[in-house]
Amino acid sequence: MSEASDGPALLIVKGSFAQYGGAERDVVRQLETWLQVFSSIRIATLHGHPDMEAEAARLGIPVFTPTEAWKGDTSVLVRITAASSRAASRAWRAFLSSDVGRASLDGVNVVHLVSGEGSLEAADALPADLPLHVHMLEPRRGLHGEAALWAKIDGRQPRPAALTRLLLTAPRRRDRALVRRMATRQRCAISGNSPYIQSRIKAVFGLDAGVFLPCVDAAMWAREGPAPEPEGHVLTVGRAAWAKGTWECIDMLVGTGLALVHVGGGDAVDLERLKAHAEAVGVALEIAPRLSHDDLAHRMATARAVVSFAHGEPFGLTPVEAHAVGTPALMVNDGGFGTTIEDGVSGRLLPRNDRAAWHAALEQAADVDTRAAWSEAGRARIAELGLDPASRAQDLRSIVDRLLA
Image (cartoon, rainbow, N blue to C red; front, side, top):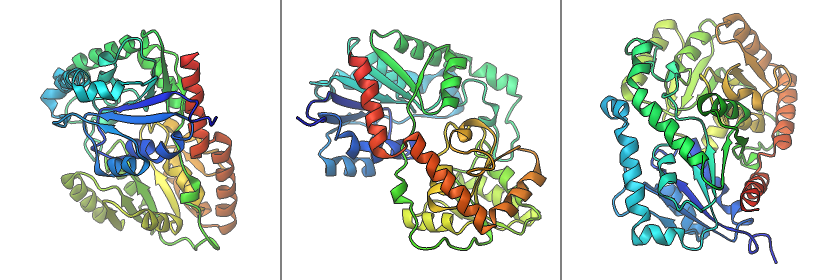
């Protein structure tokens, strides 16, 4: 009997796939290998996405959604009153008590709940005796003192940080209550997506969590033939924001002669401000809202380096992708980047405000031998961490087996 046919039935729960960012794609790219270790998989969400639904249909995975999709609201009033979270709780209760919602739970042995907008609220609506694994990609960002997330694109706070922290008191308390109730379930395991997030869960909620790393299929990024010569640009990936370090990256490039290719787009007003700032300081800026996988891999492979100044990045998939294509990853020494980068061995972890150190690292990144050595060490680290789909599937199955023991 195969491991899958002998395995438990898994229900994946996520509040919304609408954004279809890194967290959502991480779930979708693993579905095929999860089918090899679970007897069946199904997905329940308040808001689907065409790409997720197409892949699920290809694999024969049922997707359960309410008749009317739930949409989160990030307006200031909604955030400070926790109205969106309360609406998500109501939506989950209504959905899981409907015929469609009850069908999503029929025969399920365990739930894999992936955090995000409207996700944690599902726990209160799930049967109390149903084992639950929570993949907490990070404590809900912006509620627990992360001032960088409140900042405008240029780093200015919209109001005094102390006032923002005060205004978020109600949603912060609600978030902590949701997580603590969830943790008291008879069978519940919580995993951060990096050792850094594991420590954040402890600091914010006082809970001991495990680690369930993201998945990277390095074969999708592997280059063929000789390494391309680095061109005169560096590349950043992610929606433009102060928290992603986009503005700081432009400032760092002043005087280097290197252009910035920013992949991920952003708010239209923010992008216009970025363009004006880059022009004012003499840095060429190219903004690509979204590239095909092949185009992104090419732009990454020909870059001098992949760079990030992100504040408190939970894990950071971009350095792993850079390792796979053979491009140096130069990351700020903050958040979860240290999980995949060993400074000076597989890339660089650099002080945020030391421009001279960044410029020296960019010179290192132009050296062909250095690029090859860092890439080789980086790919070895990927293998050591077991970020490939098969290893991630086995890791999730081990977590579930412990829950069901």
